[in-house]
Image (cartoon, rainbow, N blue to C red):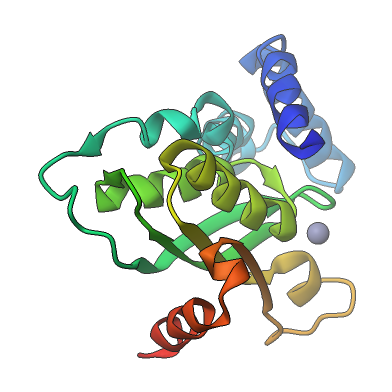
Length: 203
Ligand SMILES: [Zn+2]
């Protein structure tokens, strides 16, 4: 539970820092690595980095629950599993701010509400465009869908490469990490879990 609250605090703090101040910080790092921050090619880099960071971390300004608030009435009778596979993930690890690149698979079994397919990807996006651990990211996606849609069950799998591990440290280039989080029917009934796993492993 605590995991979700911490993120909200981060949002408020972020807005107290101006773009100019963030650009100065980037300039300091450029100098610290031994570069001439004033040379032609690097002059506008702090500005560009701050602009890029705004995109990498735009999830702080997004409300994941809101993405799920619009549900479809004309598919209300549909009560079988919905699986969305291979949702691209570009996140950053909170320990090194290094990229986490991979895919998410999200499934739910509707009981009352069915959402537009793009909305599941939006929830993934809202949580992944923040500083994350893969474990927490997996849980946040699952818990949010469970809370808002109140389906019979939710399953989330993330398969991702952590650049802090592939490009530095132990340098295991081919390593990916898989995390799963199951709620409701997916947790209680292994047959649902097995159907889900079979679908996400199909090419
Ligand atoms: Zn890391």
